[in-house]
Image 1 (cartoon, rainbow, N blue to C red):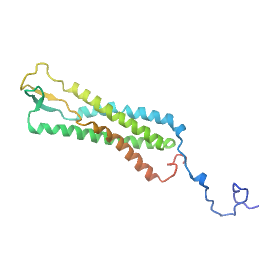
Image 2 (image 1 turned 90 degrees about the horizontal axis):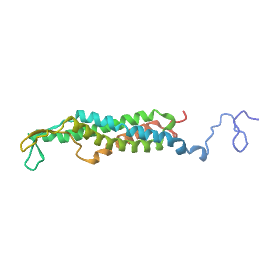
Image 3 (image 1 turned 135 degrees about the vertical axis):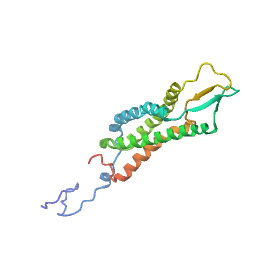
Image 4 (image 1 turned 90 degrees about the vertical axis):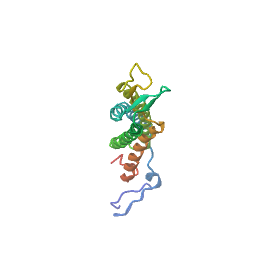
Length: 196
């Protein structure tokens, strides 16, 4: 009898022969049931990143020096002050994107849970995180720059920074998906290196 391995059919392989895996062995399946609980944990932990992200943004985003107009709405005191609306949005987008990339890098280190289940859960968590960062960030900024009680026409006040669009919540999940996708494409293994 040959010293080679025995095939599934029971016939021995010749020594030195290259064994080609069958179609059932080549397919790597997604382990949804095993990955579900860790994915839910990742979703909730990633979502909680919104609170510190909102706090950091509220401290870094510039307020707008304004005057109270006739209609009761603040008007920028100088033309250059109106640029701070863009500054606050751009800073939020940069912080969100960086948070998404760093989160993807951290999640990639959990080798045994790599895959689409963790990616989808983390992307949903990032969406909640960005929404929470917008809400908490504007709350923190409002407490940092309160309006004076005795306001009249022409009164000087500091308007807290705000994220001007709700579309900004999509940047953090995009950064996470991009970072995780780049890591997966660089990996090259069918199972993303889960068993190695």
